Image (cartoon, rainbow, N blue to C red; front, side, top):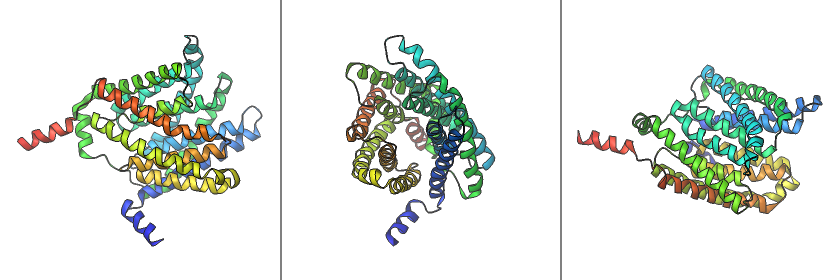
Length: 356
């Protein structure tokens, strides 16, 4: 316990990240519980589906939110929940239309979300969060196989998610302080301009489209996981993308086997499995700002456990998380190197300042 306490104090000396991690699991729990209870009391809504959507919308809105005051945080959380609803609606609306082309419409819809993840970063923290939430909404709708009849469920899930995300943030109050961007990041933004975010969006979209083509030729087990990986490894510089690919692969190939090793716990003691998943999400929140590899490993572990508890019994499908991440990372890296590569204006600016 002493060693663990020392490690926590070293990684998170101000306890803010631990508080955010606790807020993440609290938010998810409230949203999933409210959704399940409300769905169970109304025959027109599915409790399981409503709880899953609300929990996902609220969880990732809380992850992407990074404001310093309760009022601005509440505003951003509400907007990001709306963005998640919009993303799910685009999947429901566009997927059948794109299916008529002979290509998988759901995966093609994810390509549009991948573009927005990078492009909307030009509008700062809120823009980045909205872009990611649109993609998350698409991804959740894709995984649940939602149809037009599910649109009311999606809308209700968005309302529940907003309430569940805002309440813990209001209660955490000044105890939370988001990790501020490094000065070099602001230099990148100032020198890169809109063209940098546009190129990031195009890189992610092209990599995602290449994965759709690969899936059309060689059936992938979970192509959405590969698309997600290539989307989120794209960084503001080519070097940053290389680093994120390396860290995401390392984290995933460690987290997935750990999760598979805990499958007996998920099958025979689901409460313990949920507790382990909650602990992993706290580690995820603590590691995300600086240790992307640990964060990816923690999330991969959480995903394997939660899927197993939710009824996914195929070890092959669960293990595919690892190689789908490898595929997505490889495609993301290839586009970063070959398609509109991004230099590092921060480094050039630092050199120019040093010379002056």
